[in-house]
Amino acid sequence: MEQELVEYIAKNLVNAPEQVKVSRRLTSSSVIVELRVAQQDMGRIIGKNGRVANAIRALLRVAAGDQHRDKRVILDID
Amino acid sequence: MEPRRSIEATGESIQEAIDKGLAALGAAPNEVIVEVLEEPSRGVFGIGARPARVRLQVLITRPPAPPPAPPAPPPAPTAQSEKTERKPREHSEHKEPREQKARAERRERRAERPPRQERAPRPPADELLEDHEDDEALPLTDAGPDVDEAELDDDVKVAREVLMQLLQKMSVRAQISVRRVETTRESGRENEAAPWLLNVTGHELNPLIGRRGETLAALQYVTRLISSRQLQHRANIIVDVDGYKSRRSQLLRGLALRMAEQAVQQKRTVALEPMPPHERRIIHLTLRDHAQVSTRSVGEGEGRKVTIVPK
Image (cartoon, rainbow over all chains, first blue to last red; front, side, top):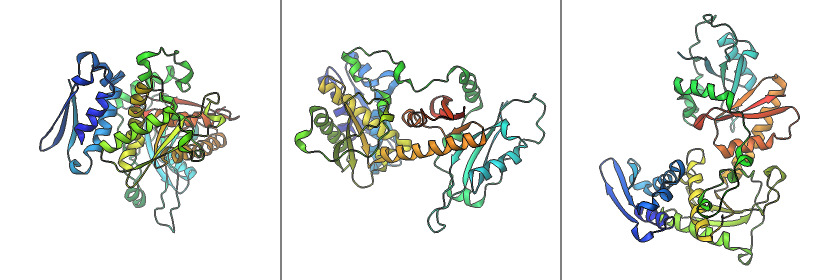
């Protein structure tokens, strides 16, 4: 579910939705969601002072929810 | 290195807590700023009763002679307060001295009202994506009546769909109910159309609210961002979860009035606990027309809080 959430948000904020790529990895201590967007869309995903990225992280935390309660949730953007 | 002394004290009433704190500090009432951390609550049948908790911060008004009494160790908290009330506001205890000093310096310069009027008129286009932070500040009274599906406009339809998608992808099972907000004169925006209120209801939605409503703020922000982009104009909507914002807003207005009363009676500045911007705004707006006090925010970031100053 984590990927779907990030993918939905990202695709609806960028100008080049076809270049949105999301993957997810699990380690023993974290859930890592990697988000790639077109270079010119970086600003839209990060936002002023990282506000958009931080909001996505907050929601991601909810999405990771019960299953990964004990893990850190990390959103990597590049 | 710590430039100011502060302690916490508890008591059955706020006044009692303040008196104890003053005694522990050996300070006079006019030498401290009182921050009310928690109002006393009686609980139900004595269960869950909590003492009043205040923090006294000594203003540096005296020459820097060694303090009369060694900085009192925090008064042994009563067993009760220790047990029942530790977690919710730890954040206010972790201020690093350095940060605090910087804050104190900035304090002089920054005594502004909430920033809504100061914003430059925003250009269109991508700026649509920027949120009006202060929109969240609408002192929500009870929302208006339920509305018929036929009365819904594009703003709310789009936003509801976006919100639904977000919730679904977060694996949150919930319903969304839609109403018009009844704006009050206090909102300071009586000339604008009332926004739509999308209230998410369901079971165990606390994670969706988050600490101090932070997750809810994120949810609203993202919902607005995506909706505004689809609509090509700013979506005039507010997102709430289980009526959290309405409740909080009522609570804050009550708090503002009580604390104003106290500031007047005791002729001294009362500081509230740190709050996020939209909550501070509710305090400012509530006391905007108060004859005997004025309000200002002090501190930075997470620690920024409203102080109520007798006129």
